Image (cartoon, rainbow, N blue to C red; front, side):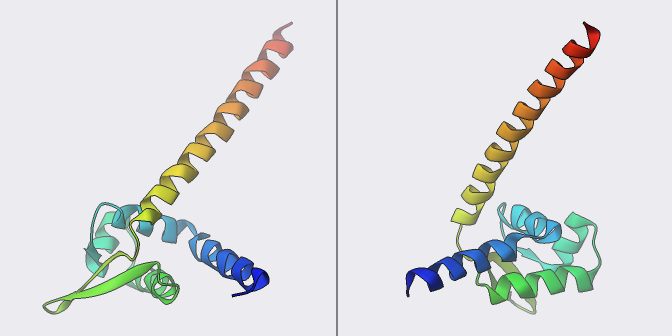
Length: 112
């Protein structure tokens, strides 16, 4: 894999994560495997939406299906996705903390 194709692979992976429903699915699967119906209930979404987003995550090898009797249970293909999402939350928290600090400073300036 050349440097360019490696960068394209990385960008493609992050594009697959770039949807609020897909993030919610991955966060839910971080706690363990779920069927489409369980994901629907947990997320309060319709079956076609959940299935469509799972199909994309499956195509990018981010989630893996497993048959349990007549039910397909989805899990994270790599549990490190949970760590990736946790690091992202820390980054967002740091960014939002900085924003809150600036907002407080602006409010103090306004009072002067």
